[in-house]
Length: 62
Image (tube, rainbow, N blue to C red):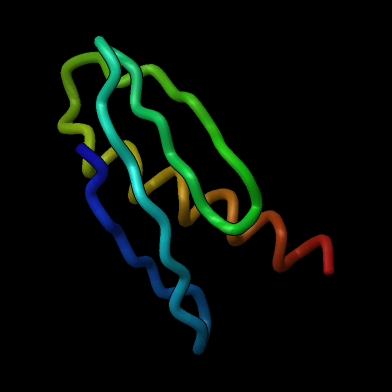
């Protein structure tokens, strides 16, 4: 089941969705799909941090 997340970077709010597949977090956002190892950290924490990181990189590149 997909869960929605939001992160704020600067004055913009970015949305994505994630789900847990085994021990991996699958994150989908407007920039594509990313799969990241979850380990012992809660999946929503991993997804939020990863989305913030991806959005920040994209903002810097623009």
